Image 1 (tube, rainbow, N blue to C red):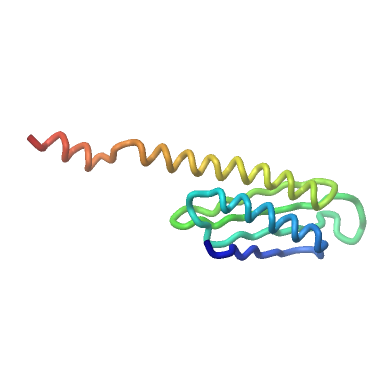
Image 2: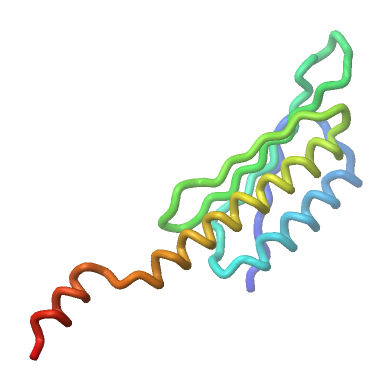
Length: 119
């Protein structure tokens, strides 16, 4: 499979955090049965220059023929915010996978109608 391009936005996050984000998101995306079109990680400092500890991590995964999956988490450090966002993203992607699986299992109405009308 081709490498996923992960886009980073927001405040200046460290090299170690970038490596962790890239590794974790690549591992999560590789486990999916469908290939996302893009992945975006955005880090912002909620308090800005006035100080305080409130970092927001927003993760967005764009999937083909589906709506984008977007999650956010706020915590005292960027790493904890990312870990919280990653946990939420895993749950959302599991929900998308389960929904797709359930829709495949149910017969579509045109298929059922054709079977009912055939001798």
